[in-house]
Length: 256
Image (cartoon, rainbow, N blue to C red; front, side, top):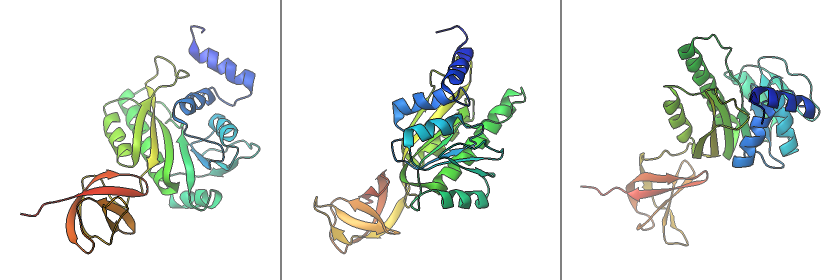
């Protein structure tokens, strides 16, 4: 490995026909976390110049959409949108171009223009990543996957907690293609939660049926919650203890 990793991956990208060295970051992320699988509908936020779009198309071979406030040079088999991901109008355009039930994966390698003021740049990176997260929650299908770049700093733990509130599995990862001195890190979220219920929240439910395993079945806004040691027709207060994309487990709250 050459001493200057930036030059190594820059030259490698040129040799292999990628628009940016960042293409290898997505390859390494996907090798570890399988964010994109064949047939997935993928949306790349902040996609210009298109290095991640190229890799996403290779991995998915399906619907791939790139979004940026800057124009993206045309790419075979990829649709692009010029727009701000914070705007509802842009979100609607994305929905129109992805599968009716939503995207399988949302990826984002965007970064703010750097000023040299680290506290300011870090805060802007967190703000951009948060916008990507909010957009992803609107366009992903339940169980969908998410990967976003962010700069490390004092605001990073709070951002990580926000991602944990929306995905079953969350990891932070630094791919080899990132420079050693870089503060960038990628947050990976897998299995998007529906948002119908929240961990540790309390709800009053009625047991509508008993499942094959003997657990009571309740519904919160049509979202299924399993509760142990209950009877059909029983009304009770529960606390959510575990959430999956399509169902959750709750426990009875004993009344005084």
